[in-house]
Image (cartoon, rainbow, N blue to C red; front, side, top):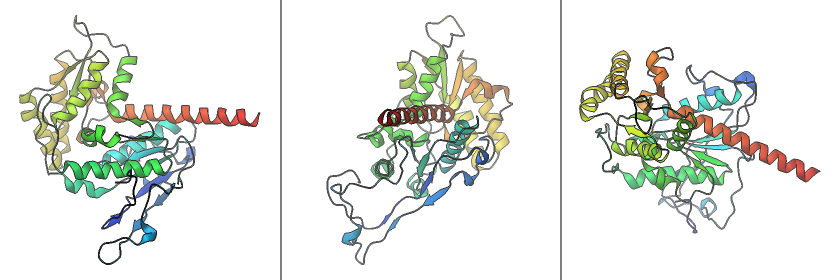
Length: 335
């Protein structure tokens, strides 16, 4: 771990690749509905630490918390992004973040990405969907949590002012990964719940609370994560039934694996409609597989919420408010 009060020694260490970006000029922005353009990352930095023979690091490469790390990132409103299990989700989030923060002619917010594609090899090939709350994801639990925590600590020590993790599956370990974080750790569940609360939704049927559907593809813990956040804001949560999962959602994921995007899209439409007939106000697409599957002009698209959008919007609000605070503080010092 990177957050122990001791000198560390690794048998073999590859610092995860870091994508960092200062404020991007408005001429370099790209619409997030198009394919991700890697040019949004203006600097790529990868640090490798090589062991000596026998797997031991040389003394000069050992890291101690007694040594105060020199931040790589100077802006106080820099966003640290933990690349999760789904690299595609990370890229989609980056495009949303850049587009939404620069679409009015302003510079995009500064960010740094720490991503390690190898984490996906620590997962099984498929996840059995389960309805409702159930046992948490256990496979390679400690290894995956440690991997994500190292990324978080590296971004903290590099000077990131807040941390985000734009990956639904990685949110299964959110509590453990964010534990002890020294800066704000924004998560998709809170961002979605807050936006829905601010929307002041009215119940479709005479009920005490508005109803929100949550559609997830892989594990009960992810559904439970959103369920808790939404219930805390006073919403009634509706999850797909066992039959819907087995006969609609699972086949949709299998269709995606076969590259049958149209088949997966049609099955997703059915799953959404099943929730809508249960009088939900909207459906949260809480799955990395569902990202961008519905075209923007699809009528059902307007009934759905992409948590990546909510996370991007809230992240931008944090960064812009932090920048104003720093600017105001600097002005007071000069006066």
